[in-house]
Image 1: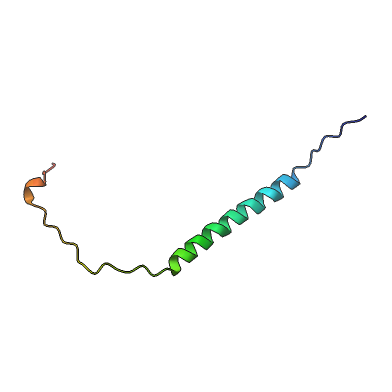
Image 2 (image 1 turned 90 degrees about the horizontal axis):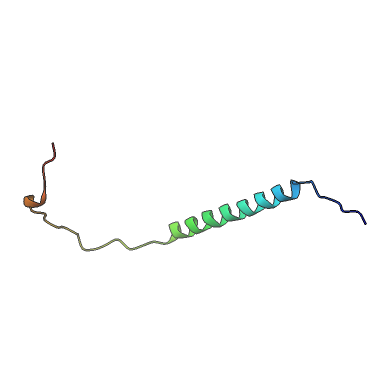
Length: 59
């Protein structure tokens, strides 16, 4: 009985490239779908008055 060692790494590279391609397509798909959603803008203006006492002058 003779053992045969596979030395070809081409299948590993092809599989890795395919997995990376699928991951990139999924990420772009999620970003595209999130971009399509129209989130409402806030209707109330946010205004907060900060007193000058809280500021420290750094020289």
